[in-house]
Image (tube, rainbow over all chains, first blue to last red; front, side, top):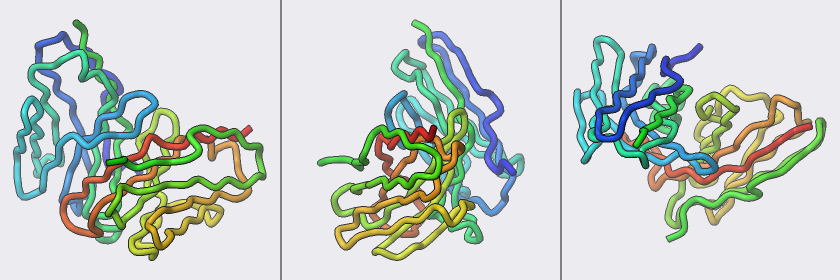
Length: 116
Length: 115
């Protein structure tokens, strides 16, 4: 039962263009959503998050959009840089029946490649 | 400041053996979580400890156990290893238990291979 889904295993974009990574979730109890970035041989690194009471959060080149009615969120990276090439994981938390905010439920990840 | 540190970084075991993985959280962090990441999948929650008490447990068999020490470091133990236990085991820490942020700081992981 995949509660957080990233349906695109990979994405390739040109440097300077926009990267859009998508994530869908099924559990309406989730109230906090996060994006993590992972380079090979390293642990995931927190990138940006959004609370369910908001529909947008921006941090520099990174913006996360949340559409609660569609149970969909997306991460926009503008402009994309070659150093952004990594695996991006969408994660959700907040279902008190599943550990509340202490447990993150991750998607399978999307491998982003930014070509120079 | 040092981040989350895990040891060993790589290890190879055979089926039926036991393994102990260790984690030191960021200084001042009292909450430690363990995640398993199988190749091609996202990390999956195993345990969460705060102030030496178990606060959450994922859908893993009893062969998996953990504990947290007074200095907030933690151990993950896996008994009777199976081939399917081969994975990257990630430890993460956070400053406060509960709360809305959900942000965890991850270590680089321990890569376990079971032959």
